[in-house]
Image (tube, rainbow, N blue to C red; front, side, top):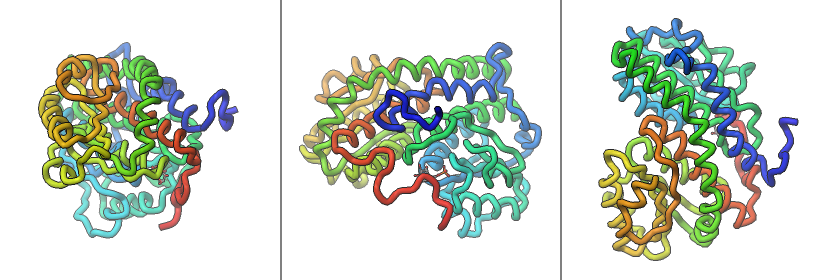
Length: 368
Ligand code: G6P
């Protein structure tokens, strides 16, 4: 049954491994690969050509999906994005109007702060939408337009497959918005849709790095504190990596935009500090490598998550490596989420914590 761990030791392991399949299900609802088009039902309820701004809001891991969504909406649809934690948006009396589309992201669809923020935006006149995994939930029901993630039931408190399915929906929406706003032409849309359709295949490959991750997780499990660094969409993933590590293993961890290293966290670097660097070989790879060298010069223990080209281009720096397939920039955040999840999972397994039910945490926070 769906509530069964199958051959896996934890629901988290099962849910991570379901990702290629459930991302595929989700994509099949939002893209038409043979027509090479985004195909989003209910999209006509959102005036993407007319709105001036999109507001993205959520809690926890959903918020980090929103943060990646911001990079996509800005780049592919040239749409200004306002983003905030739902717990902040609901109280800060932000100006919101009918020129905004407010989009809320939630696995459960019942998070109290997210629901309150949605009600606030609706009352201020914005069209409200949601990306939710549970179709009969309150947030889904109260939305003008609802985009379902097809992740299936997620049991582990820490979100994995719901997160990557949220990313899949956001990516498809950004392409559709870009097309409707006249930013992307038919050919550009087609190329992005082809890329998006290739996510499940890349996810299968990314899961294969699990055996390389286990010994690194063993080392990480001896640390008392860890730092995660990334630029661009790898910045939200650095936050997600740190969040997962602290939730599951109780090791203190912080995620930082790599460019901010010198403005604070560099003071913490010594031989006892593991630093996880997320850096595919893209246009800003060299910038991140120079941050990595600053860490190495202070004795920090680096785990670099990159592709083969990135590994080849950084041979001079001492580090451990997690090598992923060479993925197109657009979909890299969906694929790079996987080793980040696996690293936190295996670290927690080595430490013997309750992976599926970490202390003090709840799957769904329906009270403030
Ligand atoms: C809790 C869960 C997280 C989740 C967050 C938001 O903190 O432990 O995994 O990201 O709530 O929940 P939602 O259901 O709104 O995505």
